[in-house]
Length: 191
Image (cartoon, rainbow, N blue to C red; front, side, top):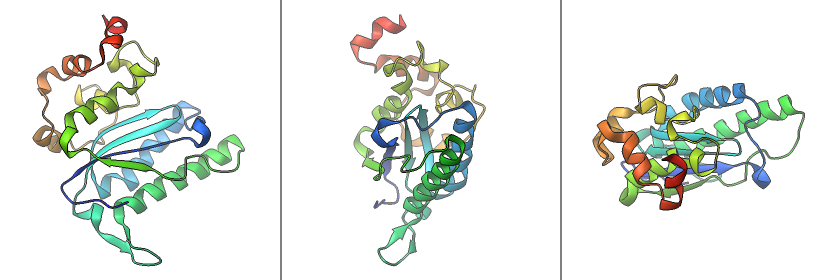
C-alpha cells in the first residue's frame, strides 16, 4: 500500500469468507489495543468502526505513514507494516481462542484515497452498524469512534483536532448530520 503524506484514506478488511472476526466483547477491546499500538503511531486516526466480521479506519497519512521501514524484498512503509502487525497478531490470538486455523482476514486489506469525499467517508464509517441492522440508533454502537466525538466514548484513539481541522462537518450538530446523510430508505428506521 502506498500512502502520500497529507492525504486521507479509508482502510478496511473483513473476515475470510465473510466470517466473524470478533467473537466476544473482549475481542473488540483487544483489537483496539492493537490499533493503539500499531496504527496510531503510524497515521492520524480520524474514525474507526469495528463490526462483527469487518473493520473500517479513516486515517490521515503523516510523515510516519509513508516512511519506508523495510527495503527488501519490496519497500514497505510504516503504516502498511503496522496494518500487517495488527492483523497478524490479532489473528494469532483469535486462532488460539477459537481453536481455528487458516486465515482470519482476507488476504488484501483494501484502501482508498478519500481526499475529495472526506466527510462522506467519515459518516459512512459510523453508519455501518445502523446499515447492518445491529442498532436502531447510530450512537448505540459502542465499537466505533462516534461515541468519542460525542463525548461518551471509553476509548480516545482519534486525533480529533485533526478531524476538526479537515473534515467539513458542523461538529456541534455531528449526530444530526450523521443521520441526514443516510439514504432515504434508512430514515424510517430512525424516526
